[in-house]
Image 1 (cartoon, rainbow, N blue to C red):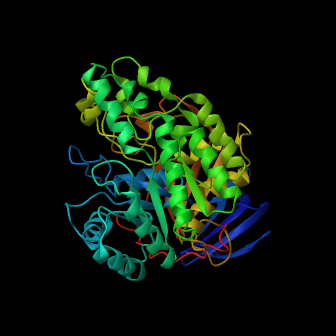
Image 2: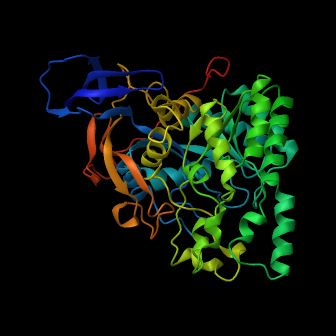
Length: 464
């Protein structure tokens, strides 16, 4: 299969230029001006942007949280991703049975994804407990499975204490992997939730009030200091939501620490007023960390521009408003945490970021495609447009205007967190490894065509 894309504007994290791209056998073979080749299909991209396929490094497909299972599996979720311009995901594996080893969840998730995913994918390991056997097994997972990142939680049922956080940080540093962390202070959240419920304050607005910015900020700062103690181990903060957390990251990076951070569209575009919507619609936005006051989103946009935030991911974790979310109708603490967003990321950040002059188009590509690939061992196979890279390419029509509404989306859930937002600029063609899989918002690929990627290790002294 060969493709020739002509007359478009090619955008990478560092360059923008008019050019043609020739693709053969799933790989970019030639980039130039006025390429003349016989190809199975020629695509005219005049007045369109050609960007690398999006890389979303924070999704939760097939996630079982005990009281509910996320609505998207690896088929419906990756179809939605592809329709939104994402061609690679790294999914955060959920917790397994108490006391299980690391390989248990790896095998479970291969069962979920293999033969179902329509785009390429990998997994982040998940640490539920720490002992010598788990630390030894981490090395096996990195070497044999190519899973070089593991997630720790500082809250929830399988939270990891500081002593064991240090053990994981040290181990992954030795393995040239990276520790990713959900940063919230467990004790403060537990106390506030109990106080609100005891006082009868159970509506959705008490979700953000029970998880204040100080809860995130304390945990971010603690992890930064622990990573420094662990001989400057690399650290990745997931779903940063607050200006306070960003301030701690700024200080760490300015003193040369290898701290990387991710934010999400919800924290850039939405705010905590959503929790006061009528008819209990605030339940749609019960996510952790929660939506914040608008000033936090403004600070996060600046953090992206200034290079303190390296990636924008989604934390896609959909539960139906008319089903699972209703568990929290009388008590916000009973509502499963999570919201959809895997399909909306690329158009939202292009429209709200590039078209509104918050970020450059190169920065857009950097945080949505290139930096995620670099940090997690996918680059240059993924995340860029260059000869030899996988032909994962998205064409965006900057003049196409779309009002986001759930009926036009492909996620297996009954709402969009961004319902009614008008975006300018939308993906019109998605190519994965040289195969057109989405045309004009219609999935035309095949179930199970996605491949598991064994990720490489990272050279943290030179990566960013």
